[in-house]
Image 1 (cartoon, rainbow, N blue to C red):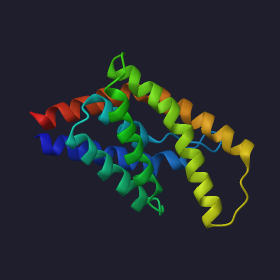
Image 2 (image 1 turned 120 degrees about the vertical axis):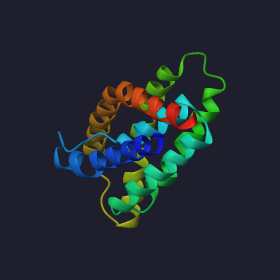
Image 3 (image 1 turned 90 degrees about the horizontal axis):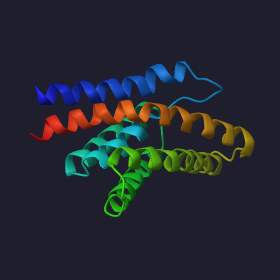
Length: 160
């Protein structure tokens, strides 16, 4: 039962991220559920199963979105940051998730845009990128409590 719950979770996140959300952008932006899952899973448990979930989700996000594996690298680095900060953070893991989604979302969007502009030699439009980063970060922050609860339930069930 735990395996099927985890499989359903992974498939739901990947389908929402790669199929549904790109077709329903608001002001050219849509949430990054894989980023939110990476932060929430690592903040909730910080175990090897959370890192395996982050690797699985971000790798398949790159495969399904024709990425250059910047998602995998970025989300793993963000998970490592969560583990590092979690040791010294005085609040609970829910507030840690919110803070790191607030910091990580625009940071990863900026890095991804920079890498794309370097690789494809395209112009770097700062203000449209800033607007998209703000909208995406607001989406991610709005979805963080829901994803945190869902991720915590899935990881808790898989560790029993």
